[in-house]
Structure formats: C-alpha cells, structure tokens
Image (tube, rainbow, N blue to C red):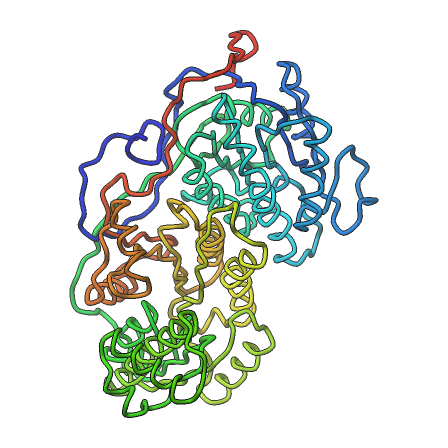
Length: 567
C-alpha cells in the first residue's frame, strides 16, 4: 500500500513522535484505469428502496454479472415484495438467506451494501436503525468471509458499502444535510477494518448524498467497483471524488488564560477508574480539585487487601497466593479460575490506587457501579447529581469494551456487547445532558475507528459513531464537543501482547505521563469546530487501509464506451 489514506496522497516523512492531528478532505483522483470487474459467481446487493440498487444491478447485469437484490424485511417477510428478503438483523435469517443464494446461484463473489441509503421511517429509534444498517453489514460480512476470500484467490472479489452523510464523510465546513445520521459512521468503521482482514478483496466505503439524482449516484457506485486501488474511504461532493488525510498540527502550550474548570466542578466520567480514564481522572483532580462522578461496570474494590495478598507484588507471587488460597479452602485449582482471579486483583489494585490518588490530589470522587447502557440507572444517577451537585459541568464518555476476533469468529452476542456499549450509551448521554451547562463534552474514540484494525470490526464501528456524533452535537450545542482518536498507551489499558501488536503496525505508544497533559492541552487550546482529533504516535503509514493495485486474474470488461464517465 502507498502512504496516506488518499489514492494520490503524497509521501510524508515518517515520524514516531506522538502528535495531535486533524482530518482534512483531499481530492481522490483515481490513479489507475477504470474497469468493470466480473466477480466470480454472484454479487449480492442490499436494496435501498430508492431504485439505486436496482439500477446498479441492472447496469452490472448488462456486463454479464449475476446479481441478487436483497431487501430487508424487518420482522416479517410479508413486509417486502422482493425475490429475496430477510430480516438482515437476525443471524439465523441471514444464514438462511446466504444458504438459499448459494443453493440457487452457486458461489458468491461480492457484496454491495446499499441499505444505509434507504429512507428511514420518521421517529425511528436510532438503535433500531443502527441495527438495520450496521449490524446487517456485520452479519453479511461474517457469513461471506470464506466466499469472498476464496473468490479473491481466483479473481476480483468486492465488498462495497455506502453511507448517506452528505458526500464529505462529515468533514469540512459544509452544513450537514437534514438526513445526516451519526449512526452511519458505524458502516465506515466496520468497512475499514474489513479492508485489513481481507487484503485481496476490493473493500471500500463510499459516502454519498441521496439528494443527488439516482442516475448520478449509480454512476458513482459503478465508478467505485471500477477503481481497483486507492483509498478505502471516499466520498462524492457532486462529481468531485474526495478522501481524508490527517494533518498534524501542534497546539500552543502555556498557562491557562482562564481555568478550564472551576474548583469543585462536577465532571461525569464513564468507563471506570482504570486505564486511560483513571489516569486522566487523577490529572483532573490534581489540577482542578474537581468533583468526579465515575461510572463503571466493575464493583468498587475494598480499601485494602488481606495481608497475605497485599504482600504479593509480582504476577508469580500473586498467582501463588491465589493458588494457595484455593487449596486451603478446598476449591478446585484451574488455570482459568486462577487467571480470572489474578485479573480481578490487578484491576482492583489499579482502581484502588487511582481513587486514592484522586483523594490525595484534593478531588472528590463518587464511584457508581452502572452500565452506561442502563438508561433507567443513568437517569437516576443524573437526578442524584442534579440534587447534590446542581448538575453535570463536563463529561468524558470513555465507556467501552474490546473482544477482538476476526469477523468470521465474531459471535453476534460479542458484537452486540462491544458495539452497543459505545453506540447505545452515547444516545443516552445525549438525551440526559444539559448542553447549556457544559464546559466541554469529550468522547474517547480510537485510532481504530479512523484507520480500522484487524479483529476490531465492532470496536471500530462503535468508535466511528462517537466521532460522527461529536460532529453533529458540536454544531448545535454551545460547548465544544470533541471525539479524541487515541492511539495506544504504554502500560495503560492494554495487554503486553496488544502493545507488541500495535508496535508491529508502526504505532508509537503514548507514555502514561504524557497522555493526560495532552488531553488537558487539547481542551485548553483546541477550537470549537475541531470535532475529531487524533492523538497518536506512528509512522505515517501505520494502519492506513489503502488497497494496492492488483493484477486481475480473470477477464474484465474494459469497453471505453461503456466506462465513459464512470471514473
């Protein structure tokens, strides 16, 4: 792959320094000749209901490509009159659908996911829509993993997804379209991760604006299956094809012109008191003596440990103590049980140390064991904060979990846990927060959502929704709303195995003593309107999903008359 996300991105000087970057639009003029690939077997196209998918399928059929138009039928197949329809949010229904298609057509060589271009019902629950547009893509991709990778060994295989964010992927200064839906960020995040899992498949996500004509949209989609290399994420501003590039811009450093927070200000922090969240909570207490309301799924640890365990410091000593305890109590000693207890001990120690550091720094802290997806529980908590503290002055939304698996091994239950922990909880916060009171609202996202990551399709999808939500809220709320795409931190928030993997990809780990200062500096000197900020250390190539041109292994139609205007 070439450097940069853009198909024609200029080479940048490699740097491993931790930097602060913004995302900017650049032209994405194709660098190779357009051609229409004929994927081996069937091309599955999800229907948008506007006629875009139907016309695209018809146009491809003119070239001899077999296609199957698939409609989302919701809970009932009777809702849609189509040759193939299924509840695309149901694992069983999707599995049955793909089995039916294979039985009728044989092998499947491509997927074009246009369902996100459909007009959403008025007043629809946002999570229901995200299930239809994002989870359906996960289920289809999971079911087609072997099909597409096998097809790519013989010739062209395609996975093209579309969003309806206005054509600029949410970037730039343009007004957002009335139909903008932040949940569609999940489609882009998931697709960018698929590009890393399927390096020999043409994987791309394209942002469109359905206010344009159907023929124009079809031409742009046909162009995307015709361009074999370049950026994984593109958009169309009219006929102009664009992609994004990070631009690294250092912020000034210096004394605060005005305090970021008044002394005793109430800051809500989701995501617990460990990892990155706990480290930054300690810094807020040290600088501002803030009142921190921290929520997490884990129970709050006791103030101290039993003497025998407290004396154990190394991993080997802790595990030996836990084994001795189980033997003394007549409990079975299994590797899984000891590892689970060891994990609990180390997490409790980190949380306990952070809570004690907050108190020592002069901050007040309340820890509440609440799942951020629990709307009734979060509603009660907000009422308590209002009664005791007058409301929330600032928020850091950092709740999230990772259960990394390749798409073929990712179970629907695991996908839901990872995806909904961020995507559902941000909807709850949006409804409960009082924007006029807030000093700032920060969402902790990840470089995974910006660049994609192998094995993290669900995590990338959820974090991209945070970034698109920040973009939307910053334009309507008086305070600054920003999503920070954190790169990996050293010794904080990840295992040693994950640290080694991220280093192998070219990322430089953020030192835990540097990260909090960069966070505070971003809030002090970053500007409203800068709604997605990358803070990471990497070479310029690290993690960028850019598809290199690959020689076709099956004949492809290249008639200049038929391809005119496509690219």
